[in-house]
Image (cartoon, rainbow, N blue to C red):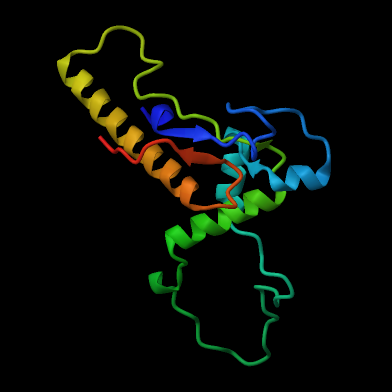
Amino acid sequence: TINSRFTICKERNYGVDFQYDDVVKSREERKKMLAGDCECCRDYYEAVGPLPKPLQQPLWRSPSSTPTKKRRFSFDSLPDCKENHEEIEHHKQEISRHRHHWYRAKTPPGYWDIGFPDTQETSDINQRAARMYARKLEEVNNEVRWVNFPVFFSHVTHDIA
């Protein structure tokens, strides 16, 4: 398991070796925490998009007195989805009121399904769970490499099975 391969550094986690969240009221301390969102806020960030660049001219233009040729819309002018996602994450980090020391764990696939799955559903659930585990392991490995990340892990073993 991931917990057997990594441990949380006590020195960088307020002296405890488990995921600990407490109430933080200081504005400066809250800015250092990870920004999260709820379902309502997620819709807001998707609709609003990234923060506008400071000291930038407005996107609208005053009408000119002479007629101009209409501009054609091009898909090449759209921002890259990954880049846009990173900008939205930055926007969330700047203004979100949902702050945590730790990211919330994702619910395992099929957790809320009532009843017993058939064989095909079971294999699908197991495949999704394996992909979820691999993503989580990759995230933790990246966090270990990034020294200044607010979530602090240290390697116990380098064994990957």
